[in-house]
Amino acid sequence: MDRLRELRIDGRPLRRRDFRLLTASGVITMFGSFITIVAVPFQLKQLTGSYVAVGAVGVAELVPMVVFGLWGGAIADAADRRRVILWCEAAMATCTAGLLVNALLPHPAIWPLYLVAAAVAALDGLQRPSLDALIPRLVPREEMTAANALQGLRYQIGAIAGPAVGGALVVAAGVPAAYAIDALTFLASIALLFALRPVPPSEHAERPSLAGIARGARYAWSRPELLGTYFVDLAAMFLAMPMALFPFVADELHARWALGLLYGALPAGAMLVSLTSGWASRVHHHGRAVLIAAGVWGLAIAAFGAAPDIYTALALLVVAGAADMVSGLFRSTIWNQTIPDHLRGRLAGIELLSYSIGPTAGQLRSGVMAGLTGLRPAIVSGGLLCVAAVAACTALMPGFTAYDERTSDPATVGLDASRN
Image (tube, rainbow, N blue to C red; front, side, top):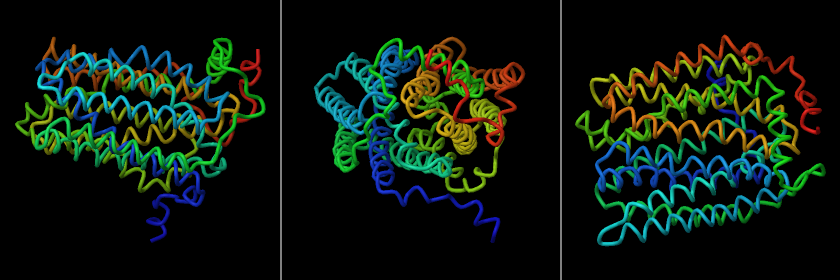
């Protein structure tokens, strides 16, 4: 029984009002967003039937995410983070309404799907650094791992329920119904965010500028454990993220009914880790944990590409999602425990690039590879390349591999580089 209690998720951060509000808002908005994540590739597949057209959504998202992610980090250090989050949430609701209007046309156009994808990527780039940098202002350092697990659970609830509902909606009720529900969830999320207390910038805040972004980048470069988190996640997601191919996998395995389940299997695995994450506070070699988890992710994705039936495929995606959650949990803990508050926004912008560019560019990579080599070889080769990349990072980044939270100095490492 003691062992079981040790596995139980640590709920201490939920005693804090603003953390509860932020978490509830995230559950709702993630639910709606994942409905749209299913609907957009489904609609593109209906309109074009092309692997590359579906994967090209990643191209539309890539540049806005890079530019606005970095600038959003600078804004997060200089502005009220609550206000930034609210304005971006309202703008994304407007974008979803645009998708709904297009889907209701007698002959929906293709270009609005790419335009809205680019706009949402830009808004997400502006918003995400403020969201990430807000967490350390709401909970104390000793509760950071627990808060990261709960934030992961917030994402996973939406990511499991959203695709399940989205997959059923687009098949049974049509794409417009999916976009309509997403728009409504944004309204509910905005209402909760309005109840948050203001979160003004720190006393060391500086105005957003390219020079300030450069100072944040120099600080990140001075921290081998931060660089390790960026490189490992970027490699894993770019090489082995097959989500753009899920509609085609469902067809290949004669299981169109399971499209929503394919999208939901990754977060289901992640949720299993979150719900049993009490063990995580006793792990101190965070870099090693990230590397092992990323290797398991690659192996599971390679096996998924070779799965003989839908049930095996879903089980392997659950394993992959669990591994990704372990990696994300310890990456977030490294970031939130060791980065000074006046740099958190800019570093969150860099983090956004590491964990968003990979999947975004990976959509194009997987689409192009599937067009060249076939569906299954594209997925299997990506998983194996991920394992090779993780092995290379282990060999070439000893500072990250050896990182131990008990012996690092979280307050002073790299600060001189950030102020020069």
